[in-house]
Amino acid sequence: MYIVGGTVRTMAGADIPDGCIHVKDGKIKEVGRRDEICVQPAADEQVLEVKGSLVMPGIIEAHCHMGITEEKKGMEGDDCNEAVEPVTPWLRAVDAVNTMDAAFDDAVRAGITSAMIGPGSSNVVGGQFAFIKTKGRRIDDLIVKAPAAMKVAFGENPKVNYSGQGKSPSTRMAIAGLLREELSRAVEYAGRKKEAQEKGEYFQQDFRLECWLPVLERRIPIKAHVHRADDIFTAIRIAKEFNLRMTLDHCSEGHLIAEELAAEGYPAIVGPDLASRSKIEVQNMAFKTVGVLNGAGVMTAVTTDHPVSLIASLPLCAGLAVKAGLPMDEGFRAITIYAAKICGVDERVGSLEVGKDADIAIFNGNPMEIFTETLYTIIDGEIVYSRGQKLPAGQ
Image 1: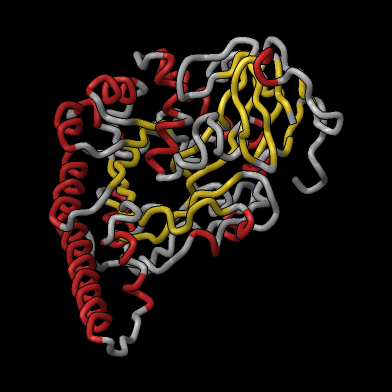
Image 2: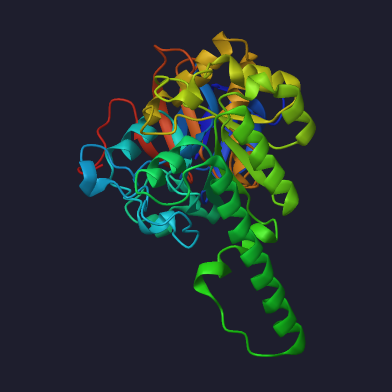
């Protein structure tokens, strides 16, 4: 397939006017000007003419609970928090995400082609996130990376959940203490396993601790639910103690400590700012946070935290961050290449480059503006949404 005629925003260099993308076998084969690439396409090649449109990488949601907290289903469709035990690292989002949740359809219609999905923040350790594509019936076929991160949470949510049950943690001290205890146990387990392997001895795997090895080996980050400045600093303290990679998710008071965060070097996923300040710890939440952090040098993505804000509002949330001071180009990056880098999948998605997945969103304008419409959404080289055409029944 050749996509021709639009302005191609690659996120990997300058925009290409009257551009062309050659897609083959689900991957991007060529990117350039129409007159350089689409000269004489083969007779069996589809040519998608999109003159006057904006062609960009598929939009990426870096933190949400789509399909694990389903819309329209109440308790029966809510599998987000196993809120009876504060430390549950062995839980996997892939076992609970329902890809037939209506939110997936909304995501595709908004040009969102992939998302980081996982457990909520009721537990100190909630379980494992997965990065998946947004179109398909069977989640096993949609996985880009799983596990992709380990969810941990600080602040009000674990406190409220477990103090209400009359057990620990009921303080921020206990949250940090439980996380350190679990990580110390995981480090000891990793040491015993390595020693046994070096000696050629049998080692009995512990299912509840084995899941920490990708974290301790820095192959995936901890995904830290943090709003308040003090919780952000506690998360950093623990990450440094155990030499862990980490993303700072929500980071609602990040603009108050932007220089400190830039010096520490951890990326932030900011939002959901299109929501009410419903808790004490989000009293300083503001759309300006993204721009302040970005200006200080923190790599920053934007999130809806769906269903807190609806998934389809993601590009509009980026637009509101631009309105509050984030540079326009950085707004585009915050929902494409920065999100991909933060989620650890930028070798496959986030920019329009040769060899990457052909995940492409095509709009009749800037998607961060309210009246812009999605013309096409393409995932793995297949058109999964076209304006004016109905999706298959059940999707």
